[in-house]
Image 1 (cartoon, rainbow, N blue to C red):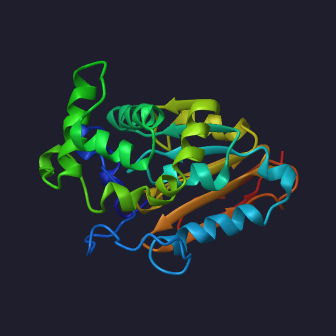
Image 2: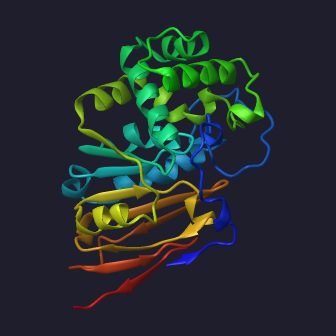
Image 3: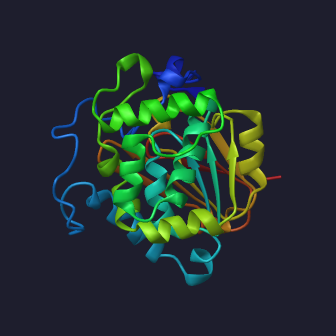
Length: 267
C-alpha cells in the first residue's frame, strides 16, 4: 500500500472538512448549478451518469440483482448511484465521523420529504428535527450552503446541491424507496483502515464507489469473492470503472490508483 502525492491531506476528520455537494475535484465551477436538467445524456453531468448506467446495463441480470453499493460519503455524490445501480444493500463510509452523520441526516430528510423540491426546501429552511448538537450544526451548514453563504471555515462547497445530487433528485421517489427499504449500514473508517480492508476482502457483490479518493491515498484492496465486484472512481469529468467479474475465483488484489491495476493472488 502506498501514499498518493497528496496523502498528507487524508485526515479529513473535522466538521469543517465536509463537502456539501459534489467532491468531484473541480477547483471552480461556473456556473455552480447547471440550469439545463433535461436528462439528454449528452451534456453536463449526465455524461458521467450515462457511463455508470451503461456499466450496470452491460452485466447480466443475476449480477444486477445482487449489488451491494459501498460508497464513500464525501460530498454524497454516491446518492446518484442509488437509483442508477438499484442495490440490494448499501454501505456508506468515511474517515470523518461528521461526514457519516451528514449522510444520516440527508437520508432522514430525503425519506420525510414529498418530492425533490420539498427536500431542497427543507434543507434550505432547516425544516426538520435533529437529535443532537452536531446535527444542529450540520443543519445550519446545509441551510447556509443552500443560501450560498456557507463560510469556508464551516465546510467546503463548489457545486449546488441540486446539481451535485442531480440524478438522485431526478429520480427522487425511487431513491426514497431504496433508502427506506434497502438495508443501509455506515462505517466510520477510511479506505486504508484495517477494518475496511477486511470488510472488502470477504464481502460479496461489492460495487465500490471511491469518488476521487485515489488522489489522496493508494490502497491495495483484496477481493476474495470477485465474481460480482467492481470499483468506480471519478476525477473531474473522467470516470474509472474496473470490473472484476471476469477474474474468476478469488482472491484478487487491486492496486487502487487512477486506472487501477489488478494483481492475481495465489494461495
